[in-house]
Each structure stands twice: as structure tokens, then as C-alpha cells.
Amino acid sequence: MSWQDFPKVELHLHLEGGAPPAFIRGLAAEKGIDLSGIFTPDGGYRYRDFDHFLKVYEAACTTLQGPQDFHRLTLAVLEQSAANGVVYSETFLSPDFCGGGDLAAWRDYLAAIESAADEAEARFGITLRGIVTCIRHFGPEQARPAAICAAETRGRFLRGFGMAGAELVGRPGDYRWAFDCAREAGLHLTCHAGEWGGPDMVADTIHDLGVERIGHGVNAVKDPQLVADIAENGIVLEVCPGSNVFLGATGDWARHPIARLRDAGVKVTVSTDDPPFFDTTMTAEFEGLERAFGWGEEEFRALNRTALDAAFCDADTRDRIAKKLEPAA
Ligand code: ADE
Ligand code: ZN
Image 1 (cartoon, helix red, strand yellow):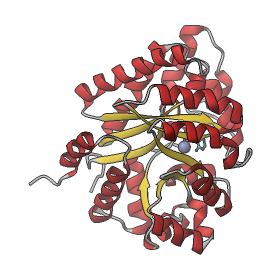
Image 2 (cartoon, protein in one colour; image 1 turned 30 degrees about the vertical axis):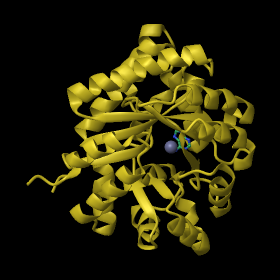
Image 3 (cartoon, protein in one colour; image 1 turned 90 degrees about the vertical axis):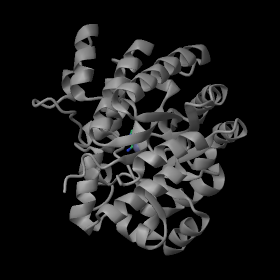
């Protein structure tokens, strides 16, 4: 069976990381920016390892120069997601790439992204909500304006705050001010951890930043007591197997920790992270899980339910999306 049209919920997608390479090449050509070094001859993104991936990612972002570019980007990304059956998606948005942390500029970027999301909902039937992310390797000082941007624009669309970037820079507690600011504004919280860092990084992220969800979290599997704590406390993992396998953060699909985490009672969900960078889609993620672990409709419906329960949207949106996930009568 093809999983392409099976309805899906995705919680972990970086908006800029979803940019099709042809889209970024087009913007670069329009603006006269030379980005030839970041593409392979057949038109994909080219990088050596995770640190280099972050550099290529930031180079691609230099083509995104105003709200209108983000409007186009949002439509391009959501069209791809919807073509893979995604009916609800949460995307990471970074004020650092949208006006450099300036609140007035951020409001303009966010309005453009939100209006593109409304257009995509009408055209492609996909619902989007936003999570502001600070960028860890830009440091704790730069995380503060990102958190203020998030706090000041919390609403129907902007639901959460989190952190992406180079996980091994600093410790979670260095970013406590930003997460406290976001929590006090009523935002939901998630943070990348346990992609490159060990179980200690996951534990400190949960304890020091008070997050409800962890981006990746797969290295928690190395500490059985931590796995038990995560299961008991209902912390949700935004697992991105294709990303992990492609970047070498874990072993291959057959050895990916998602099955062991799930079997230990952890709430796992599945996402693409940065699909064109990792040659993946939500359809490909489901196909990989089917091939590696024999998962099928029952397991995929359970993934969807866990993801929708953990989604940061309001109750009305959750009820509306739940109806789209019900099997056709
Ligand atoms: N930003 C975009 N993709 C990321 C990843 N996989 N880990 C950390 N930061 C990211
Ligand atoms: Zn990510």
C-alpha cells in the first residue's frame, strides 16, 4: 500500500529547511546572490556533515530577504507537505532569519507567513501552526529577543517556543531566561536535544527548561532510567528518523531507536525535520518505518493520535483535525 494519501500529522518541520533547492536557486538568481557552492550538480543541497549542514542552511537563508519571500516559501513548503498527506503541521520559525530579532520586523514576517498559511489551508487543505525557535549557536543573548518576539505575537497561529541549532554549544540552563519568558507568555515549549547530545542533555533540557516535547531525543535510549522517566512524565519525542539516518546521528533504519522507545512506552511522533536536505518526505518516513519495523495502519494511526494530542494548537483546531484522521466510513 502507498502511504502518500494517508492523512498525517507532523510536529517538527523547519520552515527554511523545507525550502526546495530549486526555490532557493530561483531566489538567488533573482537577487544576484552566488550560491553555486551549496548545490550538487543534480540540484540538491551539498554539505559534508551536520556542522556544514548548518552553514549551508544559513547560506540558503540569505536569499530570504523579506516578508514576501517567506510568503512564497510557506506556500512552496506546504504544497509539498500536503502532497504527502500532511493535514496538520507545526513549523519552526526563527526571528533571527526574519528581521534579525527586531520585533516590528518580525510582526511583518509573521503576518506574511500566517497569510500564506491561510491561503495554503484553502488551496491544499493543510493547517499550519508556528513555533518560534532561537538558534542555540547564536548564543543565549540572542535567544532573548527571539523569545520576546514569540511572547509578543502569541495567538491563534503562533503557539510555541523552542531551540534548534548546534546542540553541543553551551548547556540548556544557559537559555533559561528565554524559555521562562516564553512560558510566562503562555507559549508551549519544545527543544532540540538528544540528536547529538547524550541522555544528560535530554535530562537537563527537561529539567532546566521545562519543555513538554523534545526535538529528536533519540539518544535518551542510551539510559533506561531516563527512558522510563520520559515515559512516566508523558514527554513527547518529535522523532525524525530519515534526518537521523541521513546525517548519521543514529545507525541505519533497522537500528533506529524509535521502535525501542515506543516499546518502552515513550510517546513518539514522526516528522521530516528539513525534508529536501535529507531527501525525505512524510511518505518516505512512513515507508521507512514499514520496511524497518513492519509498521502499518495501526501503528501510523497511533502516531497520528499521539502527535495530535501533543500538538500546540487550540482545542477547536484539534477537534477539526481529528475528524480528518478518522478512517473513511
Ligand atoms: N535546524 C534545522 N535542522 C536542524 C537539526 N536537525 N538539528 C538542529 N537544528 C536544526
Ligand atoms: Zn529539527
